[in-house]
Structure formats: structure tokens, C-alpha cells
Length: 164
Ligand SMILES: [Zn+2]
Image 1: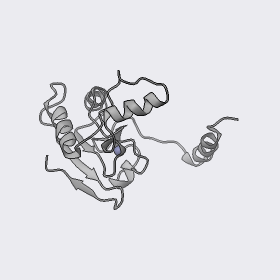
Image 2: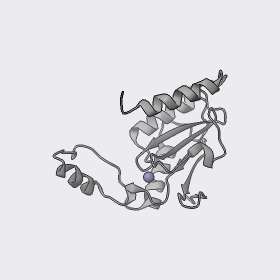
Image 3: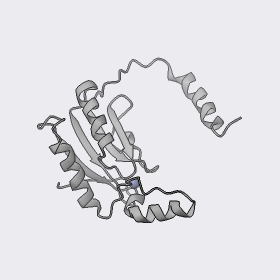
């Protein structure tokens, strides 16, 4: 018995109906989406995608970190990605705290996180502009690759393309 038994049981049912998938690891729709770990976001569903269509990169705040850049390079050169959508969302927890806030919270539990950078988001538009620029200006990705930003509204399900 473990804290994960509910998941293993659900998977046994899932696998029974799964059959064999002919999908490869390449993104069939040539898309990578960078979005937040927020549990209200269904990236495939809200974009009309299905498994096999896109690479989904998720972290706190949909931030373009060094690891996201590393992953995008692999996605582009190895796994068929030729366009990138950065998709933060409304009501994001990362916009409600600052790095010092998080350090203070962990300190209360006796943990010192000051060596970690949380990439919290004081200004969502500014963060998105910064993150789009990071992808567009990296020397490791094709300069001609389409890169867009859009903010997902977790209350209405609507996606608003960013002017940046
Ligand atoms: Zn979020």
C-alpha cells in the first residue's frame, strides 16, 4: 500500500483500453508549449490538441528558464518542433508572491532556500515579454522560428494572444 495506489489502479484501467499507440516522440503539429504547473490548465484540451501533437513544458509561472531553453533546443533539433507558444495564465500563484516571500515561508519550516531563484512574477506582461525575448534572442534556436505568447484565463477558458 502506498500513497500512489490510486494512480496505479487508475492506470491499470487506462492501459486496458489503451491498445497500441503508433505515435512517435516527434511533435506531430510541430508545436512546443511553455506553460505553468497550475492544476487548472489542460494544455492539450484548451488548444484543441491530442497526445502526440505537441511538446508541453511546464514549470512554476511558465518561465523560460535555462532548462526550458535546453529542452526547446532538443525539441527543435531532435523532436520536430518548429513553433513555440509561451502560455502563462491569470490568477497565477507565482504573481502573488515574491522570491523573498517564498524564502520567508520556507524559513518558517526551517528550510533555507536563498540559493534558489524562484522566478516569481511581479508583472506578468513584463515577465512574458522578457521570456519571449529570451527564446527569440538565444543563438541556439532558429531566428526564423515563430514564437508567440498568450495568456490563458483560468476562469473563462479563453486565450488572449500577447502583443509582444
Ligand atoms: Zn501559474
